[in-house]
Structures are given as C-alpha cells and as structure tokens.
Length: 155
Image (cartoon, rainbow, N blue to C red; front, side):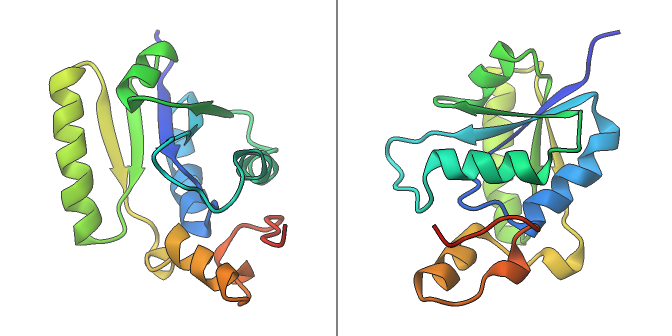
C-alpha cells in the first residue's frame, strides 16, 4: 500500500489556531502530513522563516505523522518531489472557497494524480487569519488568543 502523504502548504505568517485545528483534524486521514512553508520571493513576510518554522515544530512536536519542510515554486511540483498525492487546504469563508477552488481546478489540470482536500475549521476559529494576527501584533495588541500555545509573537 502506498503511503497517504498530504502537503499542507502556506506561509504560516504566523501559524494560527485555525491552521492547528485543520491539521489536527486531517491527521487521521493521512499517514503523513508535511507542513510546507512556502518561500515566496514576491511576498514580504512579517515573521522570519526560521521563526515560523520554529513555532510550527514546537506546536507539532508530539505528532509523529507531521513533518515540516520549506519550499518555493509550484505546490504541485513540491507534492511530486515529496511523493504526496494530496494537498490539504482550509476553507474559512465563501471567498476562500472560490479562490481555493480555482487553484485546485488548475492544479488538477497540471497534475491529475494529485487531489486537493478541503477541511472547514470549527466555527469558533473561522474568523482567525494570519493577516489579522499580524495586524494585532503590528499595532501592539495581544494576539495570543489566536495562536497555538507556545507561539511567542514577541521577537
């Protein structure tokens, strides 16, 4: 039997409780989930890559099925490199759905063997996103209720 490997791509700038929830609920579906931190040269990240990776490693340190990698380029190319047949994505809103649906459909044309799996966050986490968390931090607010335990946003 082939190993069921999923890629959970994102910038995780920073990781939120929503990301954590999606991943924890996806774990029973897969043999391994690779959290793939995207390096996008066209995007200015708020938190350094090394710090984002450190936080994710801390959050999932007790999850043997979770692996953390960084990548650049197309997610489907990274999937092929990692022998992953699945892309894991979270959907918070209908706008997320439309955006993610378009990406998934284009990915399917380019790589028919790779499936995109969507998971909805629990309702109490659906309003959390990294942009809002960054704004809270940027303006001196307390963002700790929105990130997993052990993620210290003061750097």
